[in-house]
Image (cartoon, rainbow, N blue to C red; front, side, top):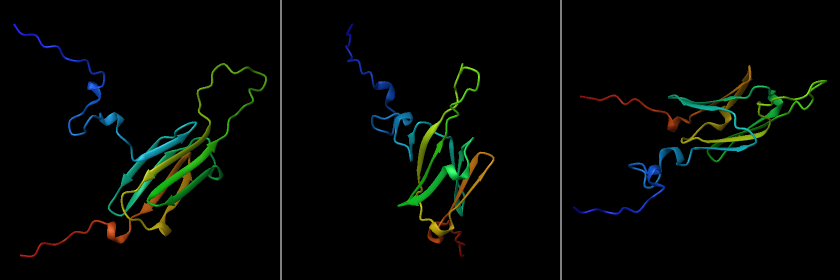
Length: 143
């Protein structure tokens, strides 16, 4: 009977077929996040535009900054802390406070002048229209 000795590889569980040496959980993201807290972000693409939604409870429109530069939509802001406990003593603090920054790469040409941002009920909606050359075109087949 022949026995083989295999060298232990602690990173073997992070390998994924098709991605050399990288599990999809650890691969680079198309979004960048920095700050003390990270608001949830959704990105949707339609035939005519991209739609970005961020949950920003407790913020006002004045607390939010939206920029688009070099193919990247950057959203920054700050959620101020409620530091007074009144006559009581803080027993538990679970809400997040501080500055945040989220950057989303948009993988198509866009109409920068048409970008719109609206803030309602603690949700920021940013609509980024695609440029005409980036929109999907239906081609009819001639016989």
